Figure: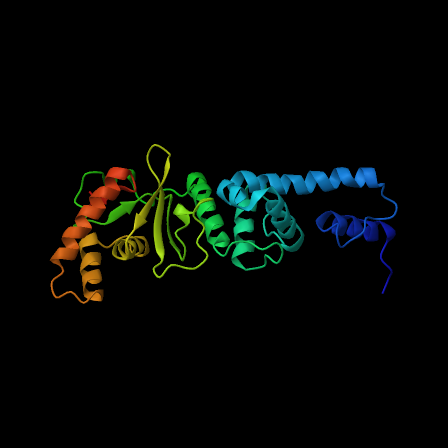
Length: 259
């Protein structure tokens, strides 16, 4: 096997040092002053992006811990995208795999970061309504026709109440019940979060998974899952929920029959 060319060896040493200078010495023929410029450029860009994209996380951790966590992310995680604006998702993926190591971080951190990035994801979503706009009736009956949800929306389930976490409220134990949040972008381009109970969360999940089935059928199904002899109470409650979602902009309308 042919020996590696010298330039390739230097490139590998150069990149390894940039990624993790604590474990990989700089190439001998690269001046420290010049190397420091590259180190600062790469790492400070990543740290600054994390700080701006996850403001609650940054405030809770403080500058020292945030710097150490950013260093661990930069040195340990292999990003799978060339796009700088998607680094936030890579950071969420890194935390979700539990590859945090040092420093110690709160047990809710991965979910908190996911919650914060959901706001960005929904705001930047380019998902379009998969229907002819002329078929969407904004005032139609949501029980009798398929419901059209905002295409820029996500249903999230968390073990921790991430939307309530602050410097004065940092739960260390998982609550008995999960937290359901529905994030959506309304017609004004604003991202909103709604906390849901389990029944409403189930309804949203069904509407997303089976968008061509009217909500009444979905609510009857939920009533059966709950063991209710009569579905009417669930259907009536579901109508109120759907109207509230429509008022807030999470529901664009209902899908009318083709002309």
